[in-house]
Length: 395
Image 1 (tube, helix red, strand yellow):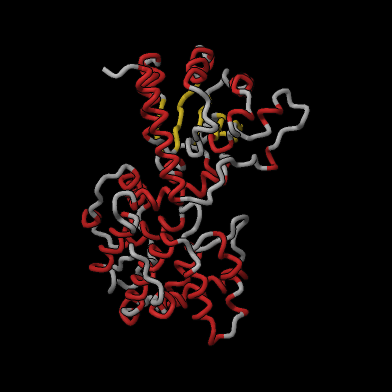
Image 2 (cartoon, rainbow, N blue to C red):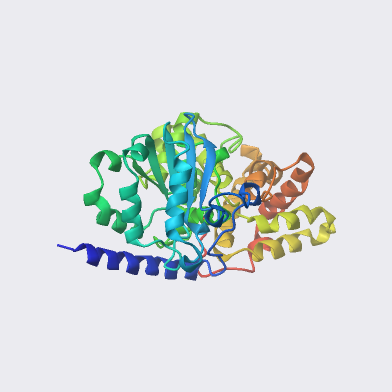
């Protein structure tokens, strides 16, 4: 039987392994996120020394009118820069304002590292101090982007946690899945978590020895066989409940059989929705300005400009984009039958591939986005032909 001390040691080893793996994949990721200026507390706040980091945020009300309280690990500074006893007191200070009513907790695990994590003794102390007053009206504790470290810690604390409280814990693997449970529009989601959300959505399949996300691979495989000659493919809608059911299957890692729905537009909508809901678009926020400048480039040089832009993308983004554009090029080659020319496909997909980091896309911004996307589809070979990463696959 594994002792508690052995589990604690295993938890530390697992956290270090996860850090090493993450650093290999995201070398430039910043470890600590500054609190958004809009939520920075006044310097007179009794817990300003803790609150200024933005670790704990009250983030509006959920779909049932319950307070959403967020704990973001990526905002924790190195342990020597934060008094963890004060952190616990600030958490209780925050909860004391709402515990007389129902509330939910959202814990963003991404960003917890050996250098900033509170000790397991601190966690035990926290659980002991949160008496029935705090636990009774907590309706759900959402743990977002859980890892093996979380599961090991859960095993350590399982003997101490009541069965009733344990039922309130819910693991959430994707930010998109979180939308089904909370008021996502009011949720304060740190930039690092948003960036990781995109990478998690894409990389989770890379870790399974696949460079193309499963949802993208399966929808393209199905549409390539049964959708290329469908008039108006990607322009038609599908039943909302069916789309939600299919998304849930993917989020749970369960198999999806599109033949069951007898509607070729279901995989088409799933494909578009997957691209639209990525926290950071496939083309990344960074290239938005470059895409907007495409119309300022001489017509004869635009294809070359497009190639330069896409070749500057991170390798995984490039691989997935090339796979998608290869398929859309195939769709456009059947445009006499399906009525989906490169221009029509660009109108459908452009806004799902690129958008600004802040604010929405204006009508005037749509034209360069559509022109850029049309060039990617129509001139697929010229834009993507000169770069072929080792993991590249085609439909």
